[in-house]
Image 1 (cartoon, rainbow, N blue to C red):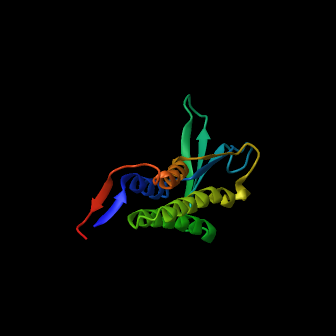
Image 2: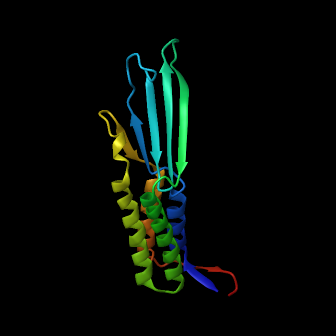
Image 3: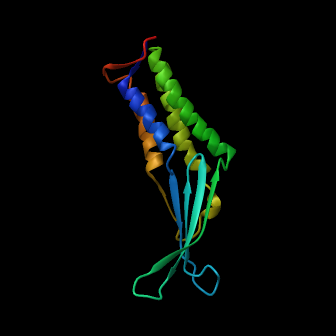
Length: 169
């Protein structure tokens, strides 16, 4: 029978759910002038497995500003380094789940640290070529879910909860 801590399962679920969302977002400022991208604004979202960008333009022709999408771009597995970070998070969540099943608390803690370090290391892999004056960059919900899930895996050994029994093995 597969026995695991319910807190550990929730931490692994949070890490895996966080990998499906954007981790960091950039908003590039509008360009003014007579260029083809006048009044254009770019929004870039980065996660370990997906890089996506959207370019929009606003027109001030009416009372309300109209937004027009000029282009959308999305690439899966855009960088080997960021994909390794994502795989380290997945490995940390899976090994933490298996370590709790084998009742090895050190394995669970170390796998949580693997996921935590990989999540924090992703900050150093952010594309630096989009940094301009006026650019705002902030972490989004995918990053926070993975970070909290890693901490839950680390702390799951300290919390006494009923074990979840799966299957009849």
